[in-house]
Image (cartoon, rainbow, N blue to C red; front, top):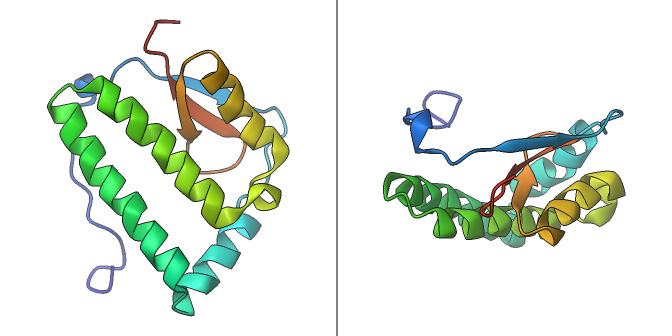
Length: 130
């Protein structure tokens, strides 16, 4: 980040992904206010935020390995862990009940689910099919 102003991205073959589903809300929330508090806490050196974001980064690396190994069970577990960590960092009020409900609905039917990156949509993997 310091050197280039952005993170390191590694291209991957999208064929490694299992089928993905997107669940979205018609009236998405604004994620800017959600991220601003966590960003400030990061910049202020908040140990909890820094250690949790490091765990999120580790999950990304483990997820890459799981995809390369076609270990979809592990990948599904990592998706759920990613959301759980973000939920602890941001808090339910900041994430919004509709966004949380989309994840929980997917989980209730056995799918793994996490945010797509901004409010109003989640991505899901259904290990038992659509």
